[in-house]
Length: 254
Image (cartoon, rainbow, N blue to C red):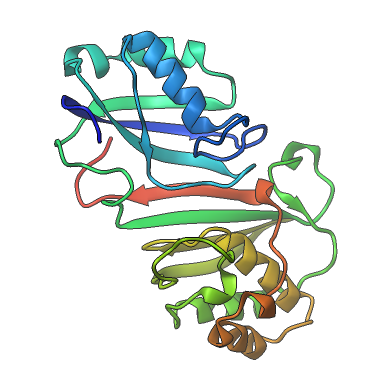
């Protein structure tokens, strides 16, 4: 149960390299634990964060929201000087951009209406994309991958791309957008949905790469989804190519 007080949203970004994802894990450095410790130290109050979701080990976030409750008023919390001090305290891989008051029932996870992820593949050796994209130099048929991406919007049960043995009530997700784009030697897959399953995007990308290698046809990709069996899909793409890039709410967020 959260303490009584004022509700705040915090907007941040982070490089997942060196962290075991967002959520606190015993004995492993995580974004949540690092940020909670820094906030608690500065505010001099035990702070517990609720994130917009979970990102796996090594996954990045260009934008991420979390909420917390504090007894401190907005004049103390929603102050650019606190953000400045927080960023001085946090490691280089985490940046806080804003902290702002919200309604008492605002929820960073449950109130999110959509999330957008992007996955980057680098098709030639490039030191500036090292551990920021999946370096994959085999030729890929982008047109076939684009066709497979369009198929995602025709389905809502993504059990074939769900991590097994997870305690989720449903594997139903509504994909609003799925598209591949190419800029020189960088391929970018963008997918937007109302929710995502753990490991879902990486499993989709790994399977679509098999489509690009012509191991699977777009029709075969469609059949994999219909089978609702993770064993039918391909391997998961590496975590370091995945970025959470947008989260939408039914109310304004800074």
